[in-house]
Amino acid sequence: MDKIRKLAIVLLATAVYGCGNESEKVSQKPNIIYIYTDQQNASMMSCVGNQWLKTPAMDYIAANGIRFTRAYVTNPVCTPSRVSMMTGRFPGYFNDANGQPVRENVGAMRIPDVSVNVQSTTIAAYLKAAGYDLVFGGKEHLPKSLTPEVLGFTDITNDERDELALEAAKYISTPHEKPYFLVVSLINPHDICYMAIRDFAETQQEKRLLEIGETELATLDEALKLPEGISEEEFFSKHCPPLPPNFEPQENEPAAISWRVDQRNFQKQAREHYTEKQWRMHRWAYHRLTEVVDRQIQTILDALKASGQEENTLVLLSSDHGEMDASHRLEHKSLLYEEAANVPFLAMWKGQIPAARVDSTHLISNGLDLLPTLCDYAGIDGKSDPRGRSLRPLFEGKKVDWREHLGVESQVGKMVVSADGLKYLRYDVVGIEENLIDLNNDPHEMTHFTANPKYDEKLKELRSAFDEEWFPGGK
Image (cartoon, rainbow, N blue to C red; front, side):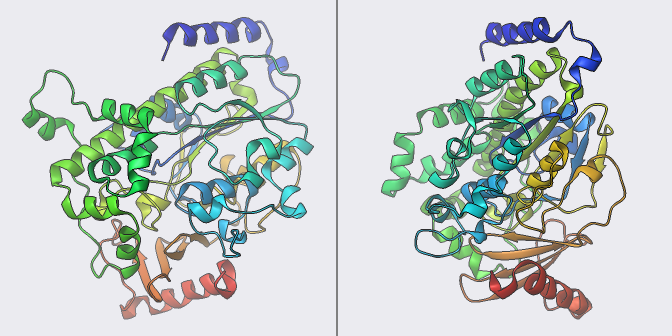
């Protein structure tokens, strides 16, 4: 990144905002910045204890606010998750152009015109009604009916990388007459997708991705570089992340997993042919790409601090889905394992949200809960899916009755997660397959307890939550 341009933005922010007193800085409605990374699972921050990377910007948000460990997406793949961000609804609420419920990227990109009810209850519609300026920058990956432009956002840039961070910093550093809602949609660590695609490209689609992915491949190549001045032996013994504890496939792995892997040639080839060193290099690059996006987030936080707006701005950080990161010999996303479905969720508003808190109890849906949360801070009652909840009481450390279960959709099936650490999965692409996971006794999901009589009552409870609370009628 151009350090001179970055410094100029910080100096601009200091000049514009530096002379204001505290009462001028704080308005009744906060500015809201939602930083949205791509393909970052919940383990990919140094503040969670991951020793294989450094994420000072994300750590800063966590240290000055709250971090949730049990935050899930509505669907662990790009476009369906982003549809939820904009609408506060499950992707499966919408049908694609063929009339089928949305479950994956292609269908989500083909959502036709949405209803007037949806148009009037998006996150953009609510915040615009509350008097906010709407600003968007970066990756969209949304159907035509739900693009930021259609919803009323001002687009500051289509760049998804350094330029986006600089433009967001510039916007923050400019005086504003009204509160703003700024979405910063950064692409990384998504570039990790290109490693297996390049290594095993056979189909026309895979080859086309490589033809148009010059920037992605260059960024990946930079991430794959070994530190200078050390031998390969020292690199693998001291610097490269080891294989994950759940590197091997799950015992009695559901047929739906193999079905999903078989849909993508490169995923199948990586699973069958990557050596352990190649998997570790994949992990190394994934960690470096996460550091890339953290540096971009730092640019945004620097501008916010220099402008004196930290005490008048709610900052949220999450991701659209995770990455399997060599778990179960898999890469990419789309599955219901924790690595793909469990994501970071951080919130900071200095002076309003108590600092340095970790919430490992409450089940959070970044797709369902974002809309009512932001509406709460904007001073309006915003609803789309009634199961979405404002997170404001949790941010502020208040005691509140909370959900006991949370639903998640995917291409291969659906699941319900329980507050006490169990997961009930119902795969449905190769017949119906049930899978009960106990994260307390098996946090790496190496087996399942579906047939264990000790779990009969819990299985019954979660089946009921699945059928009656989250996916009635199979929807």
